[in-house]
Image 1 (cartoon, rainbow, N blue to C red):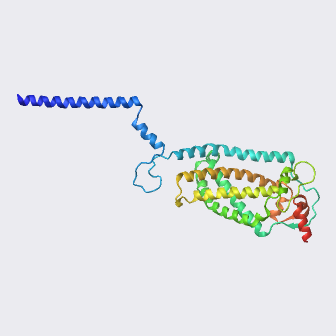
Image 2: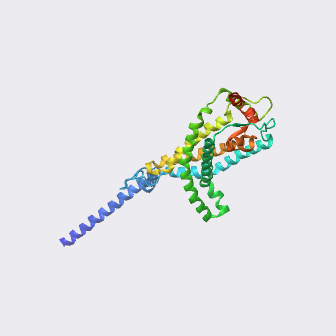
Image 3: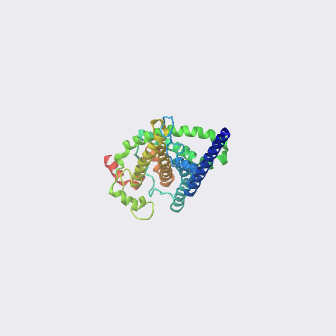
Length: 320
C-alpha cells in the first residue's frame, strides 16, 4: 500500500512539473508575441545589417555572412550605371552631330599655302597614338562589360558573347596599367604647353571662333579647348587608372567596400571620359579642317597655324 502511494505521489509530482513547464513556456511565448520579438527575424536582421559572427576563417570579412553593401553595389551597377550610361553617350554623340549639321566643318579661311610647320615630333605622335589605342580598347571592352549583356547578347547570342568577354576582360585588365603609364608620360611631355592662361577664357567665350563672326581669339601652340581636354584627360585618366589598379589587384588586401566604391568611381568617370572624348575626336577629325594632319603627319599648313594658333605661328615665323 505504501509502495503504491509513493508511486502515485511521484506521478503527481512529475505531472505537476510538466504542467508547470507548459505554463511557463506558454507564458514566455505569449510574452514574446506581445513584444513582437521573432528570434529568426532578429537573426536574419543581424545578418542583413552585416553584424559579424564567428568563423575559423582568417580572411577579412569572412565573419560576415551576408554583406549588405554588396547588394547596394549591385543595385547601383545594374541600375543607374548600366541603365543610364548608354543614354549619356548617345546624347553627347547626338549633340555633336547636330552641331556639325548646323555649323558644319570649321574650314580654312584662306587657300592652303603649301608651307608646312612642324607641330609634333615622331616620338610625340607615337606616344599619342599608342595611348589612344589603349584608350579605345579600354572603352570598347569596358562598355561591353558594363552593358554588353543587354546590347550584345540579343545580337550575337550567349556563347559568342561569353567567348568575347573572356578575352575582353583580359584585354581590359592588361591595357589599363599600360594606358595609365602612357598618360603619365603625356603629362610630363605636354604639361609645359598646357598651363592655363587668361586668354583661354576669351577663347571659350568665342568658342574658338567656330561660331559667330569677328576676329578669332588668340592662342599659342595649344588653344583653350585643347588645354581643357588635356587636364580632363589627366584627371579622369588618373581616376580610372588608380581605381582600375585597385580592381586589378585584389591580392593587395583591399576590403570589399573599398573595391565596390572603386568600381562605382571607375565606371562613372569612365563613362564621362568616353563621352568627353567624342568632342576631342570630333574636333581632331571632321570638326576642323587641317587639324588631323598635325598629329598624323606631324606638321600643319601655315594657314591653319595662323588661323587657329596665331601667337604660336608668329613665334615660328620669327624663329625662321
